[in-house]
Length: 113
Length: 109
Image 1 (tube, helix red, strand yellow):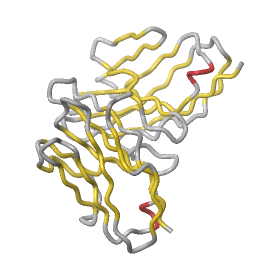
Image 2 (spheres, each protein chain N blue to C red; image 1 turned 135 degrees about the vertical axis):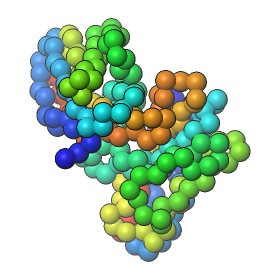
Image 3 (cartoon, rainbow over the protein chains, first blue to last red; image 1 turned 30 degrees about the vertical axis):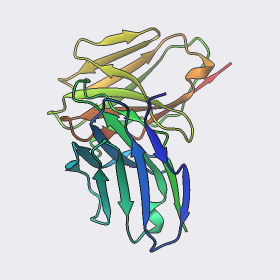
Image 4 (cartoon, rainbow over the protein chains, first blue to last red; image 1 turned 60 degrees about the vertical axis):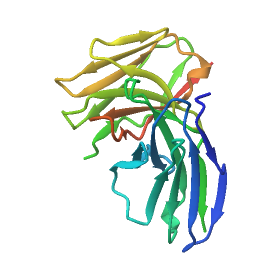
């Protein structure tokens, strides 16, 4: 196992609601990246946090936001949920000392009805 | 055109076969390259990093061709347990990874 944990495992929401997903990074890792994976596609980069600061963002609207805490755990918040937000949300942690290798958590499967 | 492209397959091969996947990327500034394995409804698991000189891990060999901007993964002596989706990932820097949509491999008895 990678040591990266995510909660909750599954979540069902309705359109317009807000959701918060959580991720604990592997011990010793100070960087967390969030990805969205729709069915049949590869993970799409949402954003990355490094030492509590956003360090890069993909093509996602501002209603996708995040936080990183001093212990390097992280949250992904999505406001005004849309049906297309239904996906597997993955966080990946990495450290400065690794060869940029990222290790994924088990993901949160979000369904928006 | 996508930044990272993979043949989606599926590749259906018998046990013991050798199979190769290619992945092309468009960002010539990319610095790091990886292969991940993803089982159905699970998270991607890092299979191997791809180094400029190529690298091997047991039955798996990864190669990088910077001139043609592609990476490859070779699996020798395929096992039933190798059945999965294989994702390539390209990183221009320490920031985002760009993934392909994956190649599906099914190894049959």
